[in-house]
Length: 511
Image (cartoon, rainbow, N blue to C red):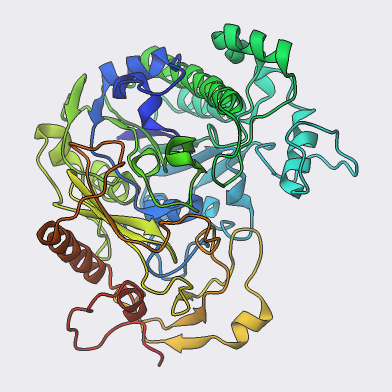
């Protein structure tokens, strides 16, 4: 058995041809259309934990990260699917340019694979050493943007780009190992994450726009701030073209992988998966980006494609509610002939692929310290904290690192030991007051601490919140049940103004 998994970051489903291509401008992505003809296309695919590394911890463990901690490494008590496969006769390989894997807050994920390759240069990856970077239209005091300007000097051709190198290396792995069995290839590119940097050949897909833009404006603008839209309509349109050009580059590399699947005759015995961790706001709801605003459909509702040769389903839609970040772990274990881990909350997707049989009636998603959200596929309910400052919030961890740094001494001095959770294998964890929250503490969105209920069938743009007490109570019941299944700590219920279900010994209490 073999598996090829191609993962993008920040890929917005609403712009892709298989999902209607409703965005503006229309995105040139013929290979995504080709992909949809070869796979099952999921129409109700949702995120779980946000953002980058929390979603990847979901992938490894098959359970939500966001209720118990913020961005961080794999924990000592975590069961990792790639690591388990590696230890049980399946060769696992990671090819990636996602530089967060090599920072302190993600530095042990790649080590769960048998082998790995890393390609430098995305966003603020500290790659090219340059004391005085060149000026550019994206210039701010942010060191990441200065680093990006230096990195771009060494990526002049399409072949130089980290995404191109990542996919080429993955295809090389496929070719080298076509004659062998029992391997899992995880190809992952940071694109189309911001900045929306692509070469001329992809911008030329939108030549009329770029010709007009260069004639009138000229400066680079391809990196939106995590904030409200403050730019004029012309600038917003330009940013969307920059994103579209980058998606077209992703589409071209997807085409390379599809060509390799054809060339190497892998469709007969290879599970093929294409997915993303989340979407991205491109000015919708007057917002840019993600994490600081509530989780609108543009971020939470994701594209997802699977080819399973056992089911043989291609060119068909699937309506069942799924969450790739926690469902792919049990699906991979099942594909390679192993039982799911006891602590997994995700679902094997084989029944969905075979006959669109539902595997869940609701799904929770969110980010540590922000809303906790729930959907049943028809309705979405955002449950906001009753305390806007979220003072009663803790990280539960034995790996006190965050995105690019360690926890501070002052934070660790305030740490206590918590009783084990159901999934920590009888290990106590540090219970550390959460002081730094990735985006959720910024408070720039008026709805940040408010609950909202939406009918996605009649209001897919989420412009008219519902006022329906009975429906809100039903969605709240889903929310509480799923939090209890995840063994959420007591303060998560308190901060959301919810009653915790009765339990003989609540986990997460100080020991």
